[in-house]
Length: 220
Image 1 (cartoon, rainbow, N blue to C red):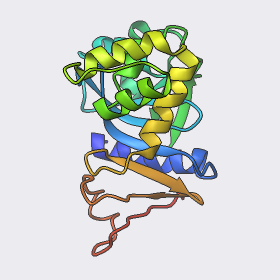
Image 2 (cartoon, one colour):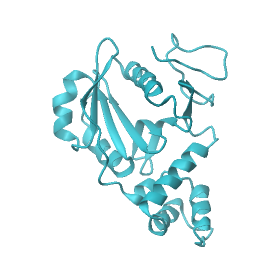
Image 3 (cartoon, one colour):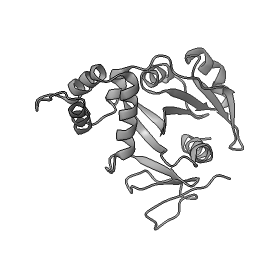
Image 4 (cartoon, one colour):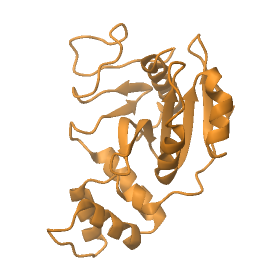
């Protein structure tokens, strides 16, 4: 299976798992730590959950670096991969990472359960915010800001002003509230994944509905 095939299967599974949660969004290619790594898929509801895809055609050369960055941001993380990568992945990933294997029939099987991340980094979480979002949060916390301050500086301050739990909650809320086309998010409603922005990359043509502003796909 190619990356696009694995991605589609995973997104169908996410609809099944989280479709009843009306406040859940799914984000593709979410930039982490100033864009040093992009999460293939992130699920944001009461937690931030990262999913990394490694298809049968991929190698695991970058997985160690990717896992280190994921581990600074996400509450949980899961690798979705082909069977041939499992042994190597287990030797590379932290033990709290989940691992799911995709079969040739498109099924997903849990190989290693996902556990809570014990090493979330507050500054890395804050860097998910845009500059105006960081300024707004600092203002609500009673902190003053200056026009010359960079986003990185503002986020670093936020990581000290707010507790980690407060920061996580504020970042999740900010991500869910974004309406900008630059932010490639999809919202789950009634067991269906909606794509509100035409800037998202197309689903495989055999699965997409043409001439529609909103695309949906349903679990089998």
